[in-house]
Amino acid sequence: MISKKMENMVANSSAIRAMFEEGNRLAKIYGPENVFDFSLGNPNVPAPDAVKNAINKILREEDPVVLHGYTNSNAGYEDVRQAVAESLNERFGTQFSAKNITMTVGAAGGLNVILKALINPGDEVIAFAPYFGEYRSYTDNYDGVLVEVSPNTVDFQPKLDEFERRITAKTKAVIVNSPNNPTGVVYSESTIRKMAAIMEKKQSEFGTEIYLISDEPYRELVYDGVEVPYLTKYYDNTVVGYSYSKSLSLPGERIGYLVIPDEAADSEKLIHAANVATRILGFVNAPTLQQKVVKACLNEKTDISYYDRNRKTLYNGLKELGFECIKPEGAFYLFVKSPAADEKSFCAEAKKHNILIVPGTSFACPGYVRIAYCVSYETIVNSLPKFAELAKTYHL
Image 1 (cartoon, one colour):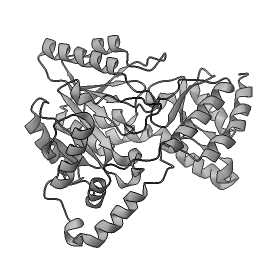
Image 2 (cartoon, rainbow, N blue to C red):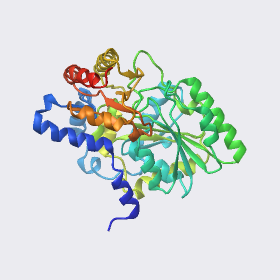
Image 3 (cartoon, one colour):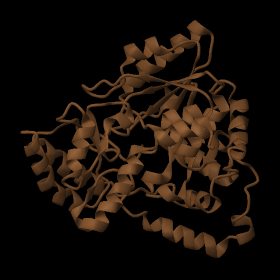
C-alpha cells in the first residue's frame, strides 16, 4: 500500500496534466491541427541559438569527467553562481555574491529546497489565490499548512487587508508569484511595499521571522514596458526562486536558482540548510551541463514578441466574442471568467469543441478558467471560430 499522504496527493493529481494527456488522446482521434490544447504552460518558442552553441562548445572543450561529475558544493559551480550574482547586481542594483546563490533543479526544486530548510510541522505558509496548485503539495511535503488569501477578482492584486488578518504566530513563509500563474498579473511596487510593511509589523508583533518567497519563473515574460519589482530591495527576509524554463525555453532541463541574501535572518544557517536540503532531497546538485549553459547565456532572452502576438490576438478575439478577462501583463496565460457558475462544466463544454482549458479550482479560484497561449499562432487563430461556437452556447 502507498502512504496515506500519497493516497491524497494521487487522488488530487494535477488537473493540468490530466487535461494535457486528454489533449494527446484527442489529437490521435481528430488530428493535432483540430485540437486546441491550452492546458500546459510548455513554451512553444525554441531556446535561443546561443543555448545550442553553448552546449556544443562546452561538450567540445570541457573535461567530460569533471563536467558530468558531482559539483564540489551542493550549491553548484562557484563560477556559475558568481556569474549569476553579478548579473543580478548589474540588473537590480543588489550586492550578491556566489555564496548567496544556490543552483536548483528548476523553480519547483528550489521551492522544495527552501521550504525544507524553513518549515517545521504545523508551520503556516500563506499563498494568494489564484496560485499555482503545487504550492499546497510542496508545503504538505514538509507537514506545513497552506493558508489561502481569497482572490481579488477585480484586478487580481493581493487582498492585503485579508492577508494581514491571516498572519499568525505560526506563519513562517509567504509565497508570491509575479508575473502570476494563472492570471498574468504583475504585482505593483505599491502592493509590494504595503505587503512588506505588513510583514515587518507582524514580525515585530509576534517576535518571529516571516520569510517572503518570491517564485519568479516568468520574470522575463512581461509586456508593454511593465516593470517587475525585485523583492529583496523591499523586505530583508526575502528568498527568490528563479527558473530558466520560460526565459530560455528550457523546462525539461530543470535548471534554476535560489537567492538567499545576507540581509535575511540567519542567512548563513539558511544558506547552509538550503545546500544540505539540495542533497538530502535527492537532487544532490543542479544539472551540471545546464549550469555551464546558464553561465554562457545569462544575457540571452526568449523572443517574447511571439507570445505577445498570441496574447493580443487571443485576448482581443475572446473579448469580441463576449468573454470576460483581465489583460495579462506577463507570463503566457489568460484567466477568463466562466460564463457558467460551475467552471468545470464550462471546461467540459469547451472540450466538445476540442478546446482544452484548465478550471480555476486548480488555482483556488473557482468561476474562472486558465488558457495557456504558449502555443503556435495558428492554434490561436484556428481556435477562435471554435470559441465563437462555444460563446453561442452561452448566448454571449
